[in-house]
Image (tube, rainbow, N blue to C red; front, top):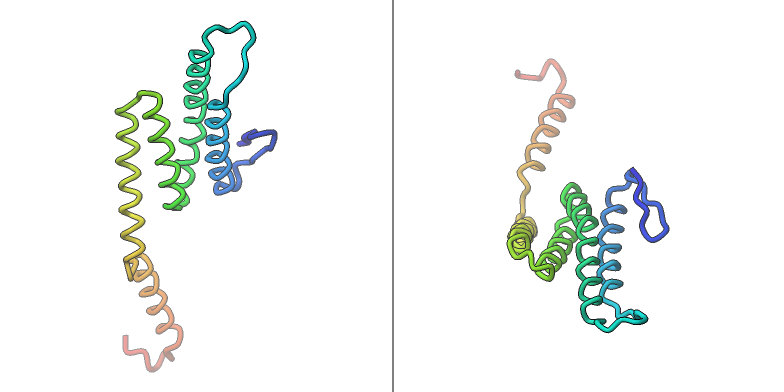
Length: 149
């Protein structure tokens, strides 16, 4: 899978690179849609500007969803939380309050998981791996005649 972002091709082999690129590009799309542009013969510049902003916000969502999915897969919680925060703001600005609240709940859950991992002194999956390594090491290091098992 290849993604063309700002003239650069990002292949799907490096998920972290793709996630960072999608998040960055989504923010660029939002910023570009927020810029003031001159339209000749336009009497309703405010209306055109509002439509451009909404279009940019809508376009950014596909990139934000991809970034969220990739960061979640990589378990990069700080970056995942950043993407979720941006998504919540985008949904809010589009008037999609239910979607904004849903993403805000995911954001809160991500922050809670991150906080839990930061304060956790032991990860149970690591403990079980080391337990297996310990048993294998004992088995390998123990002479067969002295192995009481």
